[in-house]
Image (tube, rainbow over all chains, first blue to last red; front, side, top):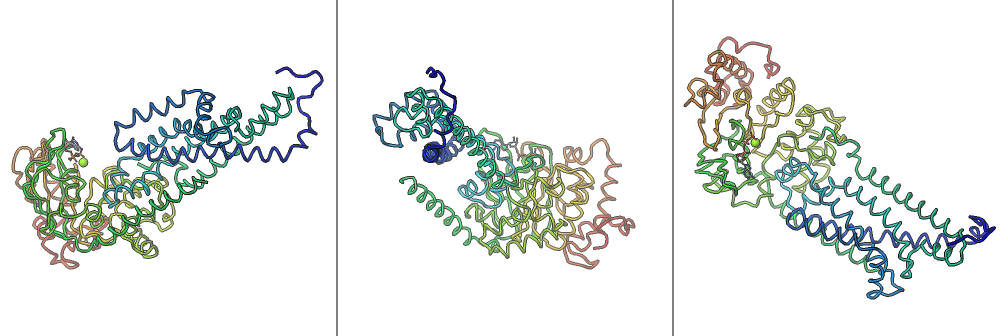
Length: 224
Length: 331
Ligand SMILES: Nc1ncnc2c1ncn2[C@@H]1O[C@H](COP(=O)(O)OP(=O)(O)OP(=O)(O)O)[C@@H](O)[C@H]1O
Ligand SMILES: [Mg+2]
């Protein structure tokens, strides 16, 4: 993309005229990037739990999630087109969900694995059943590690959504194609800035949520 | 949005899982669990072939402290865990008041048996108060009652009430052990299993934990099975001591007095002190007498007549019995 001579990097009046578009696109972008994270979490928790219970399951699950990650995103979006079509948000959401698994499944597994054996045994000895122990003891203790994965998954999902613009979705990504087609840099710059702000805000929200959810995790030393 | 429905059905199934757990919980009352624990020809062979406990016959008396002692790997923890079914025997029967423990559903059985684990094993994500109230919550007690009970126990084990809202990482090792003991006592179980509860703290803290534990037990008179690899601790705390040797064989089962006076074989003699011989033996006897005097009320309530537990130890009680340097002497 070559800049037209004399075209400023940012045209502020264009920005001012399109504020409502920015809001809409940002909302759309947020939905398209967070829905996969939520779905990914709902899938990776049972997958992670199963991988702990039946340890033979973990290598194939881990490899599968990693391989998914290796597929170029554009190719995956294109493949989805055949299944879901140009007008469906699922075209973006399904592949992005797949990508979050590569981060979230290992984090759920690691989080559960680092529950100290003495804590797990104490829970058993107190009379927790298997499910109750999982939900009330093991998963809560795994939260900091799962949250760390959630942060990575969220930020990378926010950045990846833009690619889906090529299959008709993509939120703020539309600003990039718009700018590129018209050789007009302002929307591109605006898109980049908004994406960064969005990623930063989402990360901040997650950190805050974690602080509130796990006041006990300020320091892990001395729990032994 | 379809995801909305998924979330709902997930939440609903979660609710049912918890509710089911809860229903089974409230039918399992801790009170009806008996007190006399018997091992009858019990063997535990792990999947890899290790024989952890070998043909064990043992009768653990009601209302007393019975100590399982022996070198690392001799099967103490395995023996302890066969009582609350964290381990099931390969052979033989473990019974509480004549009822095979295997006739009970494990979570229910366990809610009626206190367990103190080495390293305390506190729940890092729960406050001290909620850690202590764990079993009452599991038993479906009213929240207020469970918390009141937990506060009462903090007092019994000597924890500052200000610690109620702290998290485990904010406590010292010794304080964590106290929380572990309080947590095991919360639902007032008649039986307590304690697996090296004081081993992770320094000797001074350990001594005070032992002393307070004895004072508490004098009031509560639980049936306690106490595991340690420290013979000093065994002699200080035990009314009866079971000495195990590697391979899970019971080498000797007797009162501390009998043990010191007549170790059955070379292994027990070695374990009691080996080369340090008589000198060490005398030390034990002094300690024993002192503790016997201090604990004169521990089995039969207050009064010098004591109970059978005191009698076992009183034989050694000479003039040192009156010494006042024991912090628990006043009891
Ligand atoms: N789950 C298991 N699978 C296989 N072998 C086991 C298992 N648990 C314990 N063992 C073995 O059984 C034997 C007894 O173990 P146990 O934990 O009961 O000993 P212990 O007396 O409590 O030892 P320590 O003082 O070190 O805690 C040991 O040889 C141990 O390696
Ligand atoms: Mg052990």
